[in-house]
Length: 483
Image (cartoon, rainbow, N blue to C red):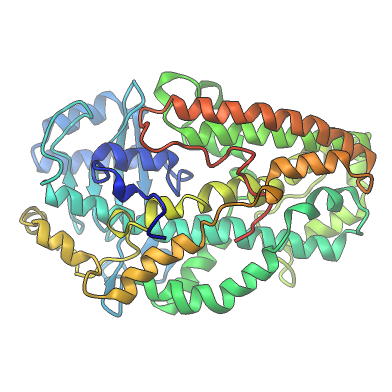
């Protein structure tokens, strides 16, 4: 692991620019969203109290370009009251909220941070950036209060990413589909034939996660107790919105219109630009197959295996997946199969394989703090370098090594024979594959090969050229959840 590149090798890893870009091309580029009026009003009120007229004007004049990462729900989802501290065995967690300005030329600049939201802004510590825009100069290296605040955000995002976005939204959601499919579809059903290649190792990996990774490792890395962790995990599962997280729906809901993703304003959002195209490629493949199998919506509606599958996925004795829709039309079935492949292949790849780069360098994204959070803005503003160092596990080698080694172990390079491109190549030439899938896979291979150049082009267009964004290259994208 010491010979692999990570963000700590960059001389500017701590800057606002690197922090902002990670929201678009880091380990969790999936939850940044347009800030609703409620949060704009709350931050504006604090800015008035802190006499930051520049912040007030920016929030007022650019409401349609203010984005946020919102972790304020953490306490309620883990069963804590607003005034309770997130702490376990000397490790502290936090429920941060951060506002960004997406500037017209596409830079995502952090403006304000609530270190740990405790039910209201009045009960929380909020700090604003001294630099109102990305082009404003300043001594970012020695701005220790602001650097501490950004570290709080990274701690919050570590938890959300690892437990919700990675574990629940890919591993566990896909497991429900796998188990229900084995129960309800025969081995020659066209839906089963389309999905089964994307399930390699998933169930055995999830078994290891339940028995070892979560209880014996992850829980010992955060500020959450075991019971709080499982409550947080269950809340994430219960809140999963199946159709709402279809890529076109999700990006639109979060304030990133698909038709504008190639505009200069959005050119740094490499994940959105790539994942939206990959979604369309997969959907085209799925649509080609299913439109030959089903001549009408009525044929889908009459397929008893599909109806049984939907019931089992939602059932209290089955998947308990309440947001799962009825699949009554051909378009709905196409979207469902597309979503399953999307979760297992590009989505898991996007949120898993960059952990080595961004998280093995612990100061960039620790899983917990090792000192209590400041209780007032004046206390935070007195912080210096030593306070930030004290928040890191410098004197706790086990914690440090786990924070570094877990992301390294989860980020091994995908073997060529396990990529989605290799799947398309072999499927299109395999006589064991049904003809309608084989023919569609030929087109899929062509589309994926063309997409390799698009991924490279989108990476070349990022303002940040120190860290390429190539994780969704089809020759690197895993065919299933392999780790």
